[in-house]
Amino acid sequence: MSNLPRLTKAKIAALLAARFDDGFKTLKELPSPFELHDMERAAERIVKAIERKERIVVIGDYDVDGVVSSALMEEFFEIIGYPVEVIIPNRFRDGYGISPKILERVDADVVMTVDNGITAIDAAEVCRRRGIDLIITDHHTPSETLPDAYAIVNPKKEECSFAYPEICGAQVAWFLIGALKQRLGLDLRMGRFLDLLALAIVADVMPLTSINRPLVKKGIEMLSISQRPAFEAVRAYLGKSRFGAEDIGYGIAPRINSAGRMEDASIALRFLRAKTLSDASREWMELDNLNQMRRRIETETTEAAFAMANPSDSVIVVAGEGWHDGVVGIVASRLVDRFKKPAIVLSIENGVAKGSGRSIGEVDLFSLLDDCSGYLDGFGGHKMAAGLRLDAERVDAFRAALCKTASALDPELFFPKEHLMGELPITEVDWELMEILSRFEPYGEANIKPRFLIKDISIIDARVIGAEKNHLKLILGSSDRKLQAIQFGYEKMVEIGQKVAVTGSLQINEFNNKRSVQMLIDKIH
Image (cartoon, rainbow, N blue to C red; front, side, top):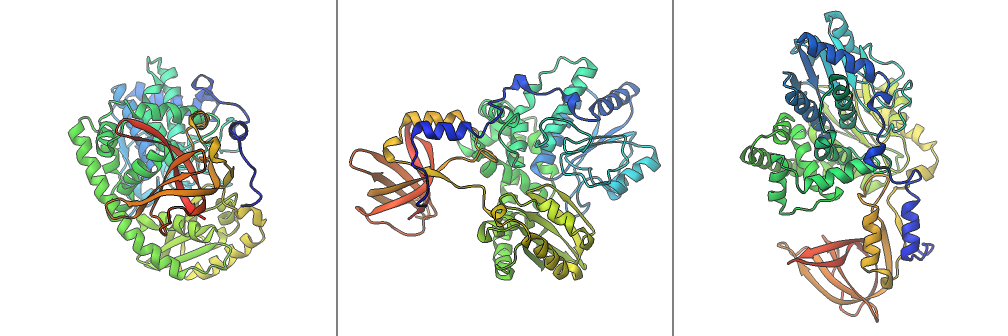
């Protein structure tokens, strides 16, 4: 940490501004939906279906992005008074996305996918044989061969010249609603959906720059005042009225995700679409219970995965018999955190290994899997996260091939993106600095919340707090400045008078109607 730059408020403002090379976009600068390839064709077919009173089925996905995408489409069709069926596949019974198995339950003239479908070659063939027009809306990385669908709307498609390819599935669905609004001549305010949309953008770890920033910023503002019963229930449960991207990432999204991970995503869809506060509160408590169950199973699986992992491998690949499908992605993230390498966690059942991978830094996991696709029965995803399936007997050979491919990459690619911005003198910590930091919110992917090093600072006061006495509340100080600080899940006690260096981020603490600047410490050195 000795080579870190010494920061001032002006330097921090300049470093943050440099993240937005195209400046701060506004909602007025959002592109037309029709800039997405095939959007015109998709919208016209749906309009024709509405005019002809044809049967429309929407098929979503079981993560936050997929559930929000499904909720958006269901809400839109409810607004225009047109009946549609919305199906979210069950992770355990149906597998991922649109599939021939799901289509056995479908009776429709038009099938639309949201947040899935870009690799659904077999399902597209089934639709073609049955005379169903398939419209795919997705954002995952396409393979070389695309499904034979009526229309494919995906910003990452080679033919698509959409200026902002890093958007989530719910955003593609939202742009489709915008296109339908225009073609149907509707008086519909697109901003009404932004509280939902912000959930998906943050939960799916989209970069919070470019057009994503104003959408999330406005959506988070709406969360505080939204009359949607789901968010009234969230505000009541979390006991807060002001939200940040962290509240979505750590408080709301894991609970919504837990439905699809542990039981069925329809619970999460019912929560988001609840018509009364009592209904929303009941579904929220169910989600909370499922999330607690998920955490218990995740802890057990993580411990087993840690014991199996080979730290010298360039990609960590572990597999266990009967591991819960719903936690393998989270366990992969835990392995990435521990070993600072990409990780893949597979659950083996009936001779089939199925699971999820997470990446780190600038390592393109999708590309790695593509290079080793000869070992796989199927895979999909994007640069930072992917799902895959293979014969359990091929796991060892796949691991060896993947590690060989990854070992040829530049080691610089493996460095985590989150890093310290620099050394911050305590004299620079004031309300002016907090105003500068707030100017660049919301923080998240590609706009990481700044973390600082504060050196040679004394412990003025220290006490243990929390129901389980596992948090450390501190007052740090120099000769002319004091700073409140807190470390959650602290490692060891410090002594009053001791000189330390601390790393962490700054936040505004609100307690008993008083606001103060507080450092959220991640490490005491």
